[in-house]
Image (cartoon, rainbow, N blue to C red):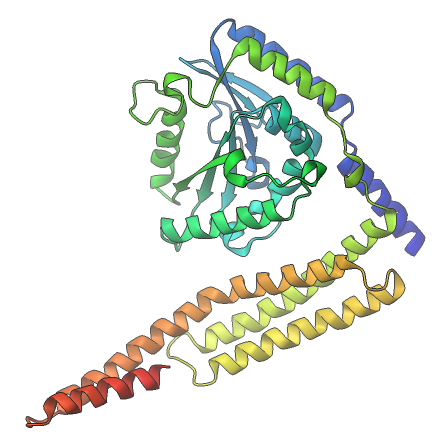
Length: 386
C-alpha cells in the first residue's frame, strides 16, 4: 500500500509541477490569436482565477461557462484567460496586466486551500518569468460575502494578511527578495448575497469596460499593454515557461506532504465539531470557563495532530519540516476558526458587564462621595470584565 501511495504521490506531483505540455501550448496559441485580433489597440490581459472553484464563469465573462480565452471588445480590449491547470494559470498570470481572484468570504476567513492559498502554486511557477513582464500588476480580489457579511475593512485585513503569508512562503528566484508591493497593487471588491449581487457584479464589470466612468481601470493606458507588445511577451513566456529545479520534490516528500495534510484535516474536523458544541453552549450568555474550554479544545486537537504526525514521521522521515509546516498552518487555522466565537463571547461579556453596571448605577443614592463611588464602580466593572 505504501508503494502504491508513493507511486500515486509521484504521479500527482509530476502532473502538478510539470504540466507545461500540450495544453499550455494550445493556450498560448489561442491567446496569441486573440491579441492579433485586437490589431493596433491596447489590451488588458486578465488572469481569471478561482471562478471554477465557485462553480461558474469569471465575473467579467459574457458567457455562461468558463472559457479558456475570451475577448471582450472595448476602448481597451479585455483578454480574459481562465486556465485549466497550474501551467495554464501560471502562463496567464505571468503574461497578465490584471489578476482577478474570486473567492468566498468563508474561504478567505478560514484561509484554506480555496482562499488566498490557491495563488501560491501559480505565483511560485510564474515568478521566474517575471522578468519578461516586470510591470506591476493589479490584483482584484472579488469576495462573495456570506449571509452574515463582515465589514470591508475587516475583510481587507484578512485578505492582505493572507496574501502576505502566501508571499512569504514562496521561494524567490536566485534567493533575492522581491517586495510584494513591487509586484501587485491590490484592490478588494465585495459581492453581496441576494438581490445586491447582480448590481455589485455589474458595477465591477463596468470598471473594466466603461471608459466613461471616472473609476475606469484602464484610463490613460493604465494596467494594459499594446496588443503587439502583449503578443511578443506572451510568446516569450510560452517559450520560457518551465518548472525550476528547486520546485521538484522527491516522491517521499510528496507522500509526506500528502499524509501531513490528511492528518491536519482530520484534526481540524475534530476541532470544528468541538467548537460547534462550544458555540452552541455560549450563544445566549458568556461562559465563565469559556477560555479554559477553548484552550482545552485547541490543546486536545494539537495533541491529536502531534500523535498522528509522530507516527507518520516514524514511518516516513524523521524531523521533516513538512509536518512542522502543517502543524503551524493547522494552529493558525484553529485560531481563525475560533475568532468569531471569541468575538461573540466578548460582545456578550460587554453587554453583561454594562447591564450589571447600570443596575448598580440606578441603585446609587445621592451622596457627597458620589464621584468616588462612581470611580470605584467603574474600576470594579472593568476588573470584572477582564
